[in-house]
Length: 582
Image (cartoon, rainbow, N blue to C red; front, side, top):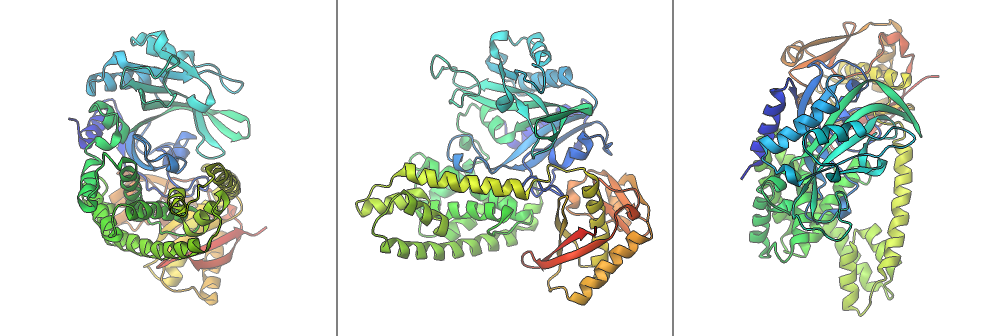
């Protein structure tokens, strides 16, 4: 059996031997990226380098990136969908391209992981008005021994990656599938049809384009390679499992659930998978600084925890203790790879306990409200879902006891309307695009450095950045501070920033060892995410920070800023909004 530790190490060693430098995982909360709620792929922290900025460690990189995807929450419960997962990735920033990337992928799968090349299937981009058919990738695969009848061509929906937001780097990809069962599901069984026969295990993205707007694609300064291999799915394939949850990554949690609830995975497998997946995701999200709320990232976390609570309620009366035991198991299991889990374990425990307690009170209110309802239809079921967090299955079970059958089509219709409104709101909220590199955004980004130091000057050295969000309309900056900022303090902070802008301080970038930069007093938001040699930005003799950019060349280019709002962003965290004066 190959363990997750062995798989991670094999991957890193393989690409280090081919000239790649290891970079650390970025946090799940993207820095200065208003287009996505969470880091969904390894490309997020590397966008400036994909667009042309030199990386301190060179042109060949390899990493293990923490990822969180929210599109498939309702799919979790099957054998292979996950919310949180680990992505193995290797990168070429204008160095090698399709031939080397595909050849190394083939070698890693067949030589290092010992997969049968006769069970590998490939898909490539079919071409459209934006980009040509990827005959080049198909030719490389055939030169390695993959016959043409195991190479499929699909359109953008299946074989084009990115951008992660509305704009940014993107391009055609070539996906690798492994034939798990070797048994066709029907006459038209093929890779990508979501049957249980094929498992997608790797994706090589050839980033040749930068999407600048709807239907607008420009060639990047140089082509890049971005690959992604999910640890969870690959681990199942190489160990001969058709169910990800049978691997050692999940079995300790599954076994503990069986012990604590007295239920069996074989009979309650869907509930077990949802609990195991969502709770692990929650542990990682909380550890990276997110708290449950009714907005954005916090809403996703709240939804995960509440779904765990509902599923646990059907298995055991001791919901809080069971969730706590499982979360501690994940901390013990994953903290050797991600030490921040152990550092933030107490916060994680308290957050889970508080949120479950709040939800159980809401659930009790919902049950009392349910008893007042005379007619239970699909719309009523959705109202209970939206107001009290009642999943459809709970409402259906309660309705059945009253002799009602719920019209699930009506519930689904109401749910889709809700989703469409949410997506529309999200599109507006995050319309800035992935790592928007416009001149205005660059000004705002540089201004956050000045704001960070000004906050420390006025409020004290306990102030540290906890997050930021920048669009072309404003900057938002989160920082550690327990008290409300007085109007007088806000005036002093704003004046300090504008004074440093008015004297037109130079903004310079140097590369140096991370430890040296920190020893010199450089500030860093999530310092563990930066490689051992990193970019350090200095603004005159006023500000020194680890950062990936982008920045103006001198502060006079920013103009004046105006602080427009200050508020709480959680326990011990304050939030400032500021805009450029026009």
